[in-house]
Image: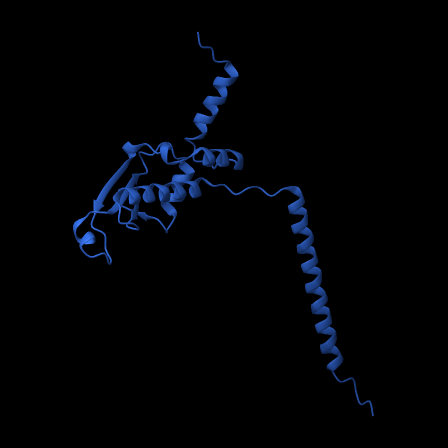
Length: 178
């Protein structure tokens, strides 16, 4: 008989709930998700692949063979992507998007259809990993160093202003010296 402890069940339930929230993950959660995410984790039923003729030089091969790949990922169906990452993907201007809320990734880099499919999946994985990324919180030492540098910069700015003011006041005539 298989037995799952209550604490193990609560942990799994917590991580399951976490993937459906719009609140960004902590750095550790996002990093763990990124490390485990790869091309095999993308459900093939959520991806649509279309082929067309590639553009550019290539002669007869380009004119005859459909090597260009258009990969489309429907964001509403992609429940395995965290909601906050979907929001980032929708707002990112570097990715093509359709009116149907789909990400469009194309590749015509090589003369092989299979290599272009692989290239599209690699691009998709990179784009999703970037969207999931959460900036790491600075540690206390770094924050203290930043405060010290800001104070030093402010002190130097005030010293410079005092020297400039003194130089200008020295230029003013205070009467005849001769």
